[in-house]
Image (cartoon, rainbow, N blue to C red; front, side, top):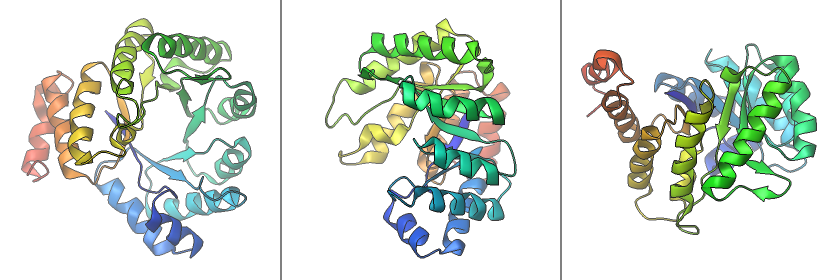
Length: 264
């Protein structure tokens, strides 16, 4: 399971304050903690700063890279901000994100082709967000066709079927699960990803919902996820699911985690 760490996001009050105060030590500590907890990529997002996103996103890229060699997932709907951030990246990144929206595709696709990074592709188009299982699969097919037709390797494409809070849409979690299975079956070699904790927003005991949904999504083929890797119970559930789904040869990673005290 590829883990994209979500904590360096300006939607979090502590991160927002650290960005505006240019508290580099705080950001570096967050990045280092996530790297040590098992992150494969560290997401950096300054999207809540309208008008200052480009400046702050570039600062985040530079600051996080001072703390860890774990590669970045540069997160913005703005091609301009992504382009500026990519110029400061020291190693290949994951771009988060592109969609079938023509303006977004036109802005992001040249960057994907130029920097040869991995790309998160949202099941969203000019017609809106794909909310049903069928629509998610249809948009995913169009994304794969478009991106591979432009020379993007299938292994670099991470389809995000999009899940929304069950507090406001009780069918969203089920729709994504169904789409995941069909996408992974229909396009061997492609990857799937999601911002998992969206599903529990507005609900009590969010971590319980997150853990349960992660296992359900993995059973349908989810092989990448945007989460908080410092959440020990969530990571323990992930490792158990990997073993149960035969994605951990001889349960080696599960046993290693146990010996390191990470399952307690």
